Image: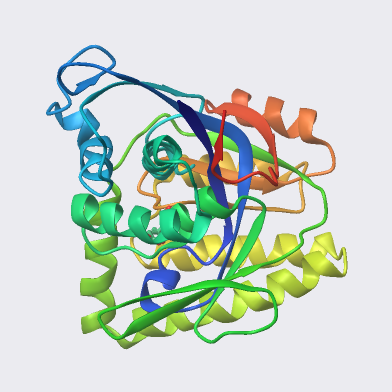
Length: 306
Ligand code: MEV
């Protein structure tokens, strides 16, 4: 048995979504695959499943009853520590494989379990990464349900309503700084700032408004406006303390040939995303500025058995 799940790209709203503000994401065409065979004891890539790098896999295994231990093989095209949802993709693909053995995979169940895994391993989080990996395609997270509702996830008085949203087919240029930063502490630091500073709380709310305006702009195909909003979203994330000089450098380099650019994911390192209709030129500009660059597209397929 095997299953796969996609990585994700957050176009607007990371960090603010943890506080219940709107966010917009899409699954991308880089996937994680998890293969399983019965074995006398639990193994991950031939080694111990207790190794720290398999903590998401191990927490996912604890969620699903299997008839016996398995040898799991994990293959991922999603670069880790790059803000592209590699842990969520591996978590969701693992859950897909384990449920697939039982005979049925249900994206909503897997999204809920995936969020629990992320919360257990990483601490405070929103369900955006795990739900995008489960559902595939474009996802709009809102505090209240609207047309297109896929599922709702609640935790500690916060509620996230995950909606299907159609995004125009676009190329996104990723600029990976090569600096990896752990998501858990970044999310915790933002919470601390928001609790003690009115400006930070205001920045979180402004990011929520930018997400809705950004979605409108993308739907109207107004890429100039969408790009401006990305630039503003980047500045607000930097104000919240999750920027990095290398991310500014890559975003500045990308902006010369694109509509706009912002950090994507948890920040502190990781990647930027640029909206460009000259993707190859943007790729080259990012490389010249010292980043790793590649182009990704939206992937409509969520968790799926292979
Ligand atoms: C990380 O990909 C996105 C964050 O908003 C954290 C989360 O939503 O769990 C930074």
